[in-house]
Amino acid sequence: MVGGCRLVGEVRVTGAKNSVLKLMAAALLAEGTTTLLDVPDILDVEIMAELLRRLGCEVTHDQTGGVVAITVPAVLDHRADYDLVRRMRASICVLGPLLARCGAAEVALPGGDNIGSRGLDMHVEGLIKLGAHAVNEHGYLIASTDKRLRGESVYLDFPSVGATETIVMAAVTAEGITVIDNVAREPEIVDICTMLNEMGAQISGVGSSTLTIEGVDALHPVTHRTVPDRIVAGTWAVAAAITQGDITIHNAKPEHLQIALEKLATSGAVITEVEDGFRVVMNERPKSVDIVTLPYPGFPTDLQPQFIALNAIADGAALVTENLFEARFRFVQELARLGADVRTDGHHALVRGRIELSGAPVEATDIRAGAGLVLAGLVADGTTTVYGVSHIDRGYSGFVPDLVRLGAQIIRVDEPH
Ligand code: EPU
Image (cartoon, rainbow, N blue to C red; front, side, top):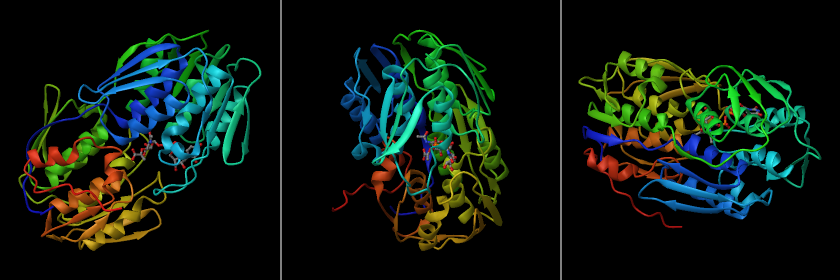
């Protein structure tokens, strides 16, 4: 890509990756055909579809219409193999539904990834509380129960997104009442609980820190529209700000991005709501903004690299604190190849804004690092080549064509193996 273009125009955001993968897993809880709408055309959806097929489901994906139909049989296989789990850590989200449906689940342990090691202790402790046995054997987490799971009080030490989902999906058909305290409150969690309730579950407190779940005997399949992807919407918002552009983002919910949009406003952007989204206009060099990532409704870690890119060309210095993932600053070394002035110390990064970055080859190490590097490349002098685009494919559908329509000078080149 060649930097220096102002991005102007309109984009439409699809459903959220971090919701739809879990909605697909939740479909396992009901025999029959569950249909999901507004599904993004991304690699992770394909991996999850393959995983569900191996469990015995029929899965069709109409990419152009964004419709995924999952037909779940009466009897499921209950093993998620390493070859898929290693490609997509989120495969772990089949653990809760498989245990609830089959009384057993064997899921390969995902290990670490490029944003750091990620524990499963809270997932496992929650399932044990509900009456399951769990062991690690030969690289697999094996959970089982000889009778129906039973409702219990569970307290999470940290509002983990994944642990909340695992325990909720296991508890919806448990016997009696489960109360989970200190749960994650992300819009994606609300979306999953909403779909489970549509399927017949009895979850109350959705969107708060405490969920109360009255177990039901069985769930039924439904048709459900996925919540819009707030991280993709936020990435476009930063694209407008960093290029001093003007982008209207459709199918986006500004209330899901409150702190991130306030930060952009502090940086100098003018943000206005439109009927189904919002518009971001930037008419000046952005000003630096400090960021502290926290569980929702705090500033999302998944927008941290994009905001570091913004701060790299902003007026002033910014302190960025990463509280969720230990290795999310790894991409800073790549940003430095574009001339960014960033110093990290533990989970803090000090970013001193430069007037201009300088194009260079860089390597994307994860989805959001990839997005951050593309944004930086848009304002770098000369040509920037971002390698490892398969990471970006995991979370952004049609990213390059959308950038081209907005005026970016960018092409996609297939990488030699
Ligand atoms: N953690 C534990 N033990 C647990 C669970 C979590 O120590 O049992 C720790 C993790 O190691 C991590 C922190 O808690 O340091 C946060 O983990 P959480 O469970 O909240 O996150 P996740 O479910 O692994 C999801 C998203 C991430 C997003 C985070 C935080 C999916 C598939 N992934 O991960 O998305 O950053 O929540 O909002 O939903 C991305 O899309 O690029 C991405 C990484």
